[in-house]
Amino acid sequence: MKLGFGFYKHMLNEADFRFARQCGATHAVVHMVDYFNQGKSNSPTDQPIGDLHGWGYAGDPDKLWSVAELAAIKADLNRHGIEWTAIENFDPAHWYDVLLGGPRRDEQLENIRTMIRRMGEVGIPVLGYNFSLAGVAGRVKAPIGRGGAEVVAMDGPVDDPIPNGMIWNMVYDPSAPQGFLPPTTQEEFWGRFSYFLNAVIPAAEEAGVTLALHPDDPPMPTLRGQPRLVWQPHFYQKMADLHPSPRNAMEFCVGTLAEMTEGDVAETIDLHSKQGRVAYVHLRNVRGKVPLYTETFIDEGDVDIGRILRILHGNGYDGVIIPDHAPQMTCDAPWHAGMAFAMGYLKGKMEEVVNGR
Ligand SMILES: [Mn+2]
Image (cartoon, rainbow, N blue to C red; front, side, top):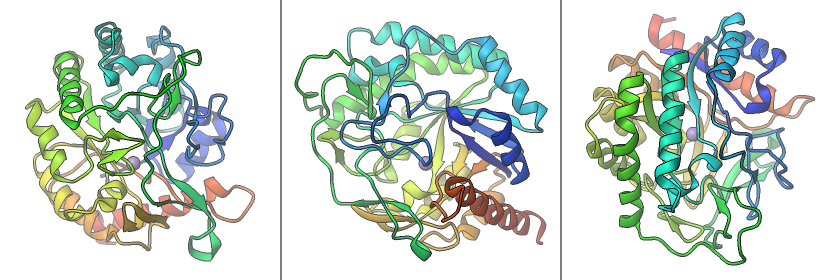
């Protein structure tokens, strides 16, 4: 097991590389999409939260990740003693019609295959993604964590419709006509997902890149009136069964699995790590289940973190674990302090599980 650190786009800088390494990270997960682009209610001082208007604006649909850009980031990471394990998430601008089943779908799939080939060329082994219409929406933030820490929580279902021109919580077409995204059935949405897998898995196999699906956070049956994909544990098995390739894998988010109303997160990670389907792990803690839950510090909450690590280690899991989100701590650097606390806790627990000390 390896300790990693998740870098938002704006954190690809000297200070944050050093911070992550100082926390003990040896591996990186990098977000290439800027969630905070022109966002009015979404500040880069925390994980993206936003409101019903979304996080911000998606990028340029025609500007794909280039080999030069990826190689430069990789060289920066390596210079700081960090290996690049994964890119996390597509820019909504790159694949909105893949999610919507729209007219540019095949063109966008070709672009995705191009970016996967470029990842292979540079040597980035994993591509994490969320196959989601509403994205990570409908959460609130309040100083209700331990000691009054700012935490992210959900306090009820959110089914306000998605405006035209917005997907995955970001605006990809600011001049879209007034109105809202029409409803989609769960069957139709699984069909789009299957179409995506069939279109990109062969390219992933050739490039040596593993695709890793994040479950739906928050895991509600619908969000903003649209269906979700993996919102109970058994849908992860359905996803695995859709395509037998080992390149069809999971970005296993323990916190999201713990927020689901069915199943047991430890049993679920046991099942999938035994099958070798876990590409990397988001490890955080939470109290409660949808639609009422609160993210917590990693040492409290409903998840037995030590048990999760023992299961992964016992099943021979040799991949990367990152802290995902952490509460904000009261000081001059609330996000970094929260992350440092989670990294230290994980590093200690991992050493205990792997080395018995
Ligand atoms: Mn996650």
